[in-house]
Image (cartoon, rainbow, N blue to C red; front, top):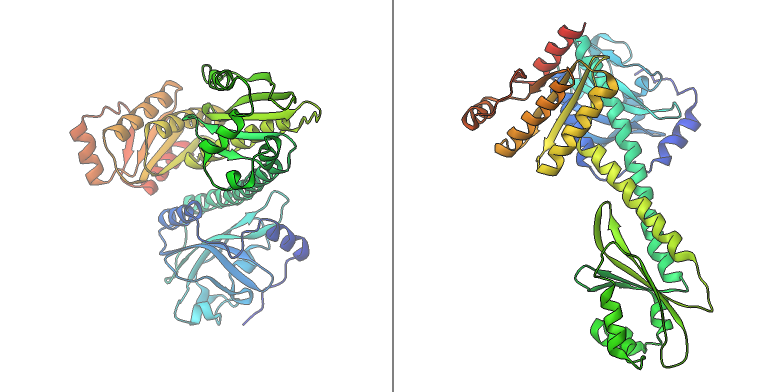
Length: 429
């Protein structure tokens, strides 16, 4: 068997691959969706996301083949990573590089291969999104273009996955930082239940170990309240901060022992939603200023998570200079329906697209809500002067739409995504 040549920048390529911490991780639906879509578009029984490690080929996702990894010497993708363009092997039995490859001669019996490289932002080829068949064949130019577009989406998901891991680490650091702070911190939800207390809170209020470890939040609060001459006023002032959920508050507290404690509070946000309140307690002789910075960092983390989740739930894939595609997978509730409309309108405007494909092949249930959402999206895009093609209209879906009397106006419908892409490409050539 002919050994594949080594990558010209192998050490840097491996360093980039390993920086993503993706090798030997569990399957993830975001990657499985893309391999399923690649197999569907290309009409092949097998699709894989392959990452080329030092001595092995490891699969992040497979469709149609239960295989975790192979030797790198056996990997077709070892050749694909040598360039930035797709590699196609119409018949491996007629190709000297692969004719005696165990993947060809063995039980798997690969005859056809097409792979699009996964190119990182630094230009390094990490692996490939590939499709395979046990029969010799070719891909149409449209299928090969779609495979390339999907490979870009795979690389984007790898990037997003890395950013999500960084966000998780930052949140863990935030919790650790809270426990290391000199300020006492108490986090309360909208039901006024305490969800987190840091070590400085226990120390600041001199709470006995047996009370702190008992897990009785009411007993813990009674200990704090009993440190004030006017306990009722302390409780009233504490409850008053909930009158305006948007407000940040600040006031001085004077416990019996003569200390002066600054109590401050801020709403805890997740995007536009207020989840509760963060209350800080600081002895004014300490003058710790870290809490405000930590809260800002938390808001930035939450905002970045929202942006990442929105992009993952409504991916927009450019098909050509004049056409974009949005594959919808899973359920479509009212919130996601609005994301579909917003993302589609923004994509059509940004790419100056003349045609937009909405593929509902992966939508599990098409009911009144889904049908109306599709109609709204189609009408909104048409207002921008673009045509809309809805694909994945299976016979049972068509029957549902007819029974619901949904008016798609001038929207074009096609039974499969391939038919929709074929229609689009014939109109934009």
